[in-house]
Image (tube, rainbow, N blue to C red; front, side, top):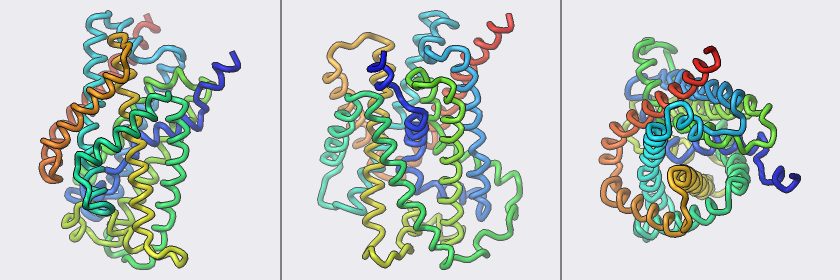
Amino acid sequence: MQKEKKNLLTPNEVTFILIGIMLDVTATSLPNDVVVVAKQDGWISVLIGAIYPLYVALLAIYVSGKFPKENILVLSKRYLGKAFGTILNFLFLMSFFSFFPPLISTLGIIVRTEALPILTPLKIYVAVFFVGIYAASRGIKVIGRICSITFWMVIVIIVPTISVLEQGSHLNVSPVFGTGIVNILKGSLNSVYDYSLLELIFLIYPFINDSRKIRSATLKAVGFTAIIYTWITFITIYYMGKDIIPKTIWGFFTVIEAVHIEVVNNFRYIFVFFWIIIAVKSVTIFNYICMYILQDLKKINGKKIIYVVMASVVILIAKNYYGDVVVMDEITKYTAPISVIYNLLYITLVSTLIWIKKEG
């Protein structure tokens, strides 16, 4: 019993994993996404966008309170029937999988642009998958520890950006609410993609060593991510202005270039190094999630073969369809809303059925 307890996740590790699945390399382009619509009020849109993960968190808290040892894959088959529940679980897997190729592609572009231009995308993808698959195969406890490390990496690279306040202008974020509430709300929809995948909590809450702490662990993850995303967007707009940001690919990278630390020659190198590790962490989580759901759909004996097949499919899709930033944005413009809407309907349906059953 004591050994089993040690293999479970602590509440902090659950928080770090949830932050890890939401906060990845795409955060650097978040200001670009919201400024197009909300202009200087983009940071307000990002703050409002946190309503989505908060809603997911509240549903997870409710469901985990009723069934602390059974995840949503089990509950969907119980309340919707084995056949229909399995189909919905498979679509749940596909919604997570749809985020995988653009993540790998974005990581490859960042590595080639900011660190090692001599590497080909294929070499980068293979190396990242090798590390990600190895870490994922070690289990959820190892992932929790990795996410704990990357959490502090995020702190290390975000805190120094406070110094950029001296170089920006308050005029860039003025007038507040100047774009109108309609545009601000439209902009918040653009931030939902970055907040998505907190639905992971419906898979991992049975692994927490104290089910009473699920509420605080989940809400902490939402709160921290909302603060980081809002700050990234605010400081980018404050420093660059709404007109310059759309001319960049990753607006927040420009902010990083403005950070000057006396003991560090170029803070950008530290940021890129940490950001790559953070991306590898995301690859690890995605590998674990996909394998976990696949095992629920069908018992798998040869995990290594499945990992190789899954990596090959993701690399093939990323290389052929997501290699260019513009094309990638066009594709995700359609795939992201579908995945987010499906996840929202899926968890809402299961949660509602649990509530109806309880009331009945």
